[in-house]
Amino acid sequence: MDASRSLREHALDLLVARDPQRKIDGLARGELDTAPIGSGLELAEPPGIPGRPQRPELVDHAVLKQRSVKTREGHAALIHAVAHIELNAVDLALDAIWRFPGLPDAFYRDWLVVAREEAQHFALLRDHLATLGFAYGDFPAHRALWEMAERTRADVLARVALVPRTLEARGLDASPQVKAKLLSIGDAAGAAIIDVLLRDEIGHVATGNRWYAWLCRERGVDSLATYRELAERHAAPRPRPPFNTEARRAAGFSDAELAALLDPAIG
Figure (cartoon, rainbow, N blue to C red):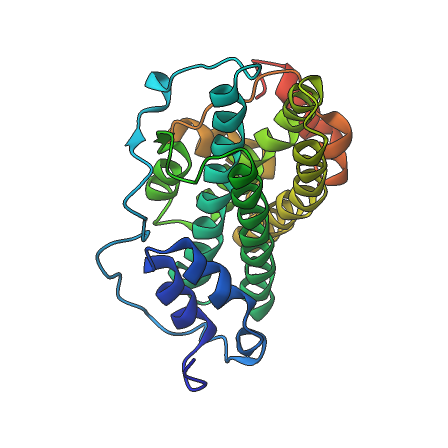
């Protein structure tokens, strides 16, 4: 690793890497912690963002086949789907680091922590999938997370509003149901991984909430009204119940934000 290059340049290198293991290994390197941030650099966007392995096939979310978790393939498909989300989350954190210049150093360090933890999550799920006789790429996967990254590429406020605080927060809501499904078929190891994910994802969503609040203060805008405007402008999916209120509170959502989830006139 070139010690003269900035953290943001290293993040871009890892983002375009096609091999997930290269992302995992690159993020684990301690040199990233001491690399200069390079917050003022204007980096040109290369082709091939994000780097993807040849598989899985990426399809529209609506055409993904629903499988019973009680079948071998359905069990593996569920683990695969969560692994795909976690790999996308690695890319989203790396993209936040390189794409948006001129922010405080803490912004980039925070998303480095997120990227590392998401990489660890992916590795846990990929390895668990192998114990079921499958590999990452064996099932089709959706594009939804990265599609939102594309829509919010021009505005860091929209990015933190609609990726960690919207799409990833949906993972907080889904975790109890995913864990229950795995326990229902005796997959205690898989359920334990979901517990790890939920613990860390509360922190990731909290990172999004913290920087969203900071950016709203910097721009002098109301956080609730601005969220509604951004969600409409970028066609963000409306969160649907059941909500993991405890986890959302732990991630920093206010009472007003939690109330807005339940009120179509507000949310």
